[in-house]
Amino acid sequence: MAERNNMETNESEAVLSSGDGFTAFNFGGYHIRFKAPYSLEHYVDVVKWDDGYLVVLAKYSHSAEPEEEYIDLKPILAGLYIDPAAFLKPIKTVRVAYA
Image (cartoon, rainbow, N blue to C red; front, side):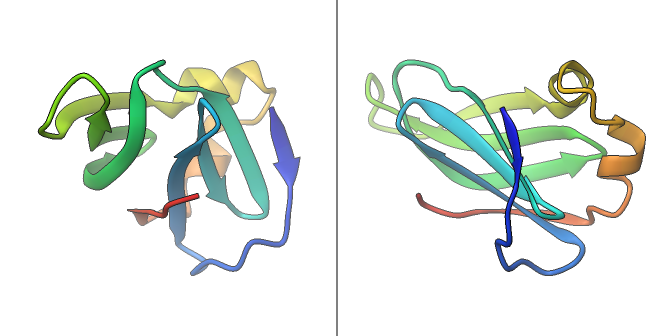
């Protein structure tokens, strides 16, 4: 699901969050949500951002320590008919926010 919104962010910074069983990626007025793993409690940190590919630390209910998780946004954006190259180009950093 992708919706336009007025979330305030730095023009080159995207925001990753989770809540209610979904991961949310916010950038450029878009709020893109997709199903998260069932045991995800929250994202802890973004380890690496590489043009649509995220390496993050995620806290899961079955583990005391955060685990490395990988998110590839390009197929998600393409499935929503959003041009991945155009959408991702201005993003320089991604930060985690708690929902």
